[in-house]
Amino acid sequence: MRYDDARLDRALAALTLEEPPPDLRARILLATVHRRVPVFQTWELWMLGGALALCAWIVAALVAAPQTADEAVRATASIVGNVAVGLLDPALAMWVGIGALAALAFGLSESALAAFRRERP
Image 1 (tube, rainbow, N blue to C red):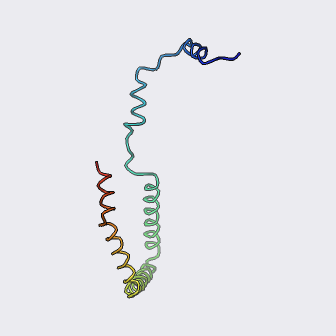
Image 2: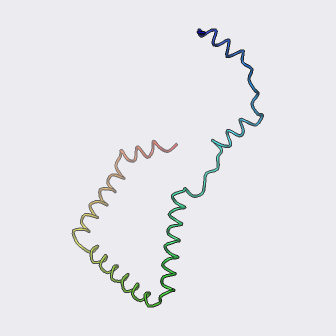
């Protein structure tokens, strides 16, 4: 059986429909528009849990073997010293300065300021 548009409209209108629950609109709005925003995103909870687990593992390792605490302090001091020497490299300081100036120049440019003004209501 083939329906044309008018017959199809009449057939659909003749269907008996069940009444929606009285609080359907409120439930839909509560589940979509008025949904509570979670305090933390999922990835933030995973990162926090991982950081806490790492800290707990380090504390347990240091408590279990106190002599390793001295070695850990020496290793950390050595790493910090090597990083400090690397950061004092003049070429690195020059490139960091150029990058910072470029970021500052772009941030203060008229196009960036105009885009910032457009976003705000």
